[in-house]
Length: 373
Image (tube, rainbow, N blue to C red; front, side, top):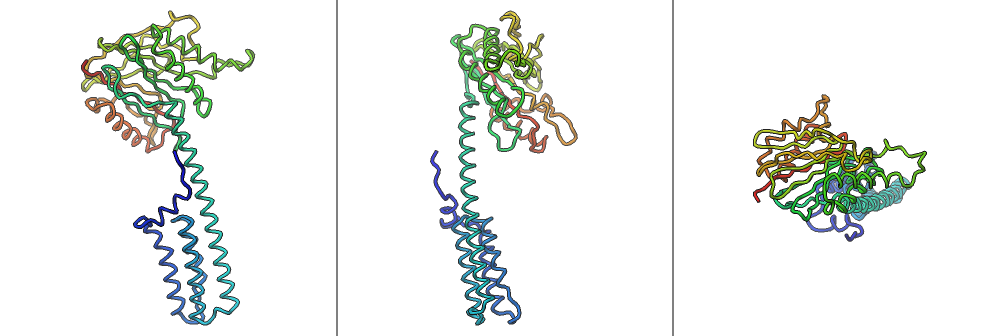
């Protein structure tokens, strides 16, 4: 991405691109000039001209602010000439003060624009990092239509501890991971990146879901503890709730392992079916020490036309002003007939409306529809 200097300059000088609000300081200059010239000799409105460059700072770029400063100084000189007071110390002092204020306003505008450019660069880097870490999900994988949604709790944030990923296997199935790393900030982002990297590196070649779960747990525990002395390691500090799923292309079922994560929902017609596993295992980073036999794979029906909804606790724990949790299981069936992208668009709008655009935790949702083979 190329960053061009002074973006506000060209925007405000291009024909038809000058904001209507820029007329305000210009109208102020004209009004003060006319009224001051026509007013009685003992009334002086010239000092009000200082408001023109001050207003321009908030409405325009450095060049437009400088132009308003020049016009304001010119208006003050014109007032002095027309009233025959240009040579007086009072008017000359007003002109000098107006010129000084205009220079300060232009300097402040330049500094502000540079900070905005730096912020734009930081946001661009964050967007690039997000596109690498939380890669967009494929619209189709085998016989599945897929869409993903990520909503950060922190305004303007691009990254967080919620995660999801999809991988294809050689035996014509799709493997999916959705998880929620404990904590927030850089530590959570680092652990999310670790878990996603381990999944993408192994999901396509691990023979079974239990072996994949063991691999993720071992990779997570090893990375989070390898630099700490044994006496300082705290296994309760770093973990992630997650669900691993395997969906065959030609068998209307879904296999899953739940590691302390909220159960998925299957939308079938107007009904919602929670996929409640018989056993929910320890979160990633806390389990896996007893071998692959410790993980139980549950199999559920997933037929053509069904929609599988995966989500993190940031969705179901979102509260409105009265403290009422978001009723995902009640709201989701009304969107079951929509394609995954449209379903998530409607869900996002409804969720943000429920919390009045203020989430207390990151939220991630994945919608999967089984299509005809």
